[in-house]
Image 1 (cartoon, rainbow, N blue to C red):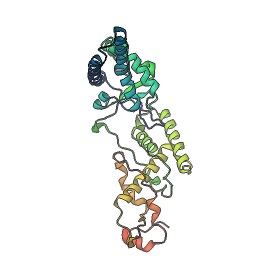
Image 2 (image 1 turned 90 degrees about the horizontal axis):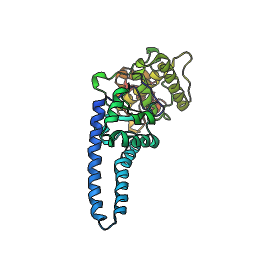
Image 3 (image 1 turned 60 degrees about the vertical axis):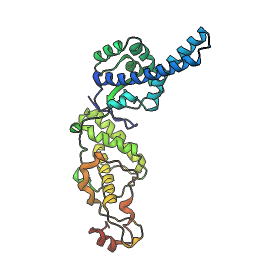
Image 4 (image 1 turned 60 degrees about the horizontal axis):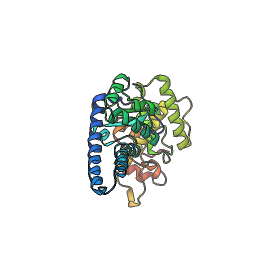
Length: 306
């Protein structure tokens, strides 16, 4: 299945959830919600014992709608598609375009679940999932959603490809302080799965991500550099800065200034991007480059760039 990277940093490159995993997640959700419904119903039965039959029926209907219908809708809305059962099974509900679901998507899925799941004991949902190529039930079709797998076995994980050698260190002076973590995540996810995409789709996604990156850094890519290579080069630079920040020796003289290392010093760490999430690790490479050349050279073994 082709992957899709969206502005919300949700990747539809994961496999659609299969019926067994969806059924297990649904079973967990139903056990929880029915247990809550029975407990609340018993409590309300004692609390409303003095009411007449019509009032008792109204309270029962309201409890059914709030607990069995409203609660799952609220949970999926607040967690952006991850109910308790889906969390346990590593599943998530996303939009067709790969973005996180909103209240209207959860509302349509929850309303259709009354017929698909509650009234027919899941028979209609199972048949629809088996017929659908992507395992969608009727509620997913009307809501424009899809249930995907979030957890991928480690053996299937794909490494982020390194940038071309001539781009390593090319972006040493680029200001990355305004680039949000969500955009870094989207870039990494795209680079991880770009070989699985249709070439035309991949180019469009790379260009869109590159435009977002240029808007944050204020610096366009070098002429003639493809968008995918530009993204890989900038991500490599960020990783190099993180490595320098993590492994740089203490600053000479105790002044608290950063220690500068030549931009090419972090190129060897290219292959370990996928396992790191560091917030705000930018700008350290430039911190000690001015006014301390001899001390920096003695401390690091590298001469700062001219």
